Length: 322
Ligand SMILES: Nc1ncnc2c1ncn2[C@@H]1O[C@H](COP(=O)(O)OP(=O)(O)OP(=O)(O)O)[C@@H](O)[C@H]1O
Ligand SMILES: [Mg+2]
Image (cartoon, rainbow, N blue to C red):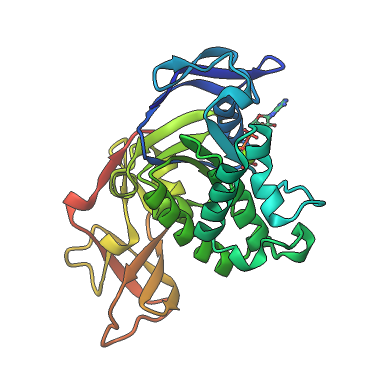
């Protein structure tokens, strides 16, 4: 549905987005995930039309968008900072784009009502932005975008400014909204947990380059690069005979003695994290620690300073490139 073909962006001669080709499917929840400065916002702004690619093409439903201005593209961008009009009520903020498009008043009203109901803002429609909490303001920004009924909604860290609890609530609301609207979402975040929870597919970016594209499950179970192996979830990277492989903490087993152990070490820390326990182990022959997670209580607890063997099944080794 959206096709990026060899899209590249340079700023002052510096490459900020390396050639990127990507097809986003209709109704898909696609997330761009990566650390600060890796080019996520720049990609979103190119799709939205606020930024021109230095090279390459962007197609929507087969039509070349590259030279169309933002208001001629059938998509909407929700910014990290809500960007509401402070002198307008909630409903006027939501209706703003519809007024600009000169939609009939009846249609405007129906769309505002629908968007307000979907984002649970009904009791707040007469308020001004300064009378709303951050999460409520962000819901207004989202309602304003969906009232336009775009084919595609672009969201740039829409929950970035909110506290954890509110983020969690809005995450599930967003996912629900996306499912019920059937709109394609292109979502930007640097929060890997958020990306895992919301997305159909994740594009992992690093320094303007794509590291890996895959479903959350693929990215967790089969990271293809060192960066994706360590950026999403905790991982242990081992090197052996000139190759690198990763083993997740829950795939490692702590054993007493050396039988079956592939490495040995000393317990550096014992962490009780509610449902799981974790051992941090300093390996004997390598300057690295590994993390072992287990979800049951050992009948004999581990102590700091104790010798420990580290075992795993060979099939849980995920070979990665560099
Ligand atoms: N208008 C501009 N002129 C020059 N450099 C820019 C411009 N916009 C962005 N950049 C640079 O491009 C790179 C990518 O920026 P971008 O905003 O896309 O990153 P991001 O992944 O969205 O980061 P964050 O998570 O911090 O929002 C950065 O190094 C940034 O400094
Ligand atoms: Mg950004």
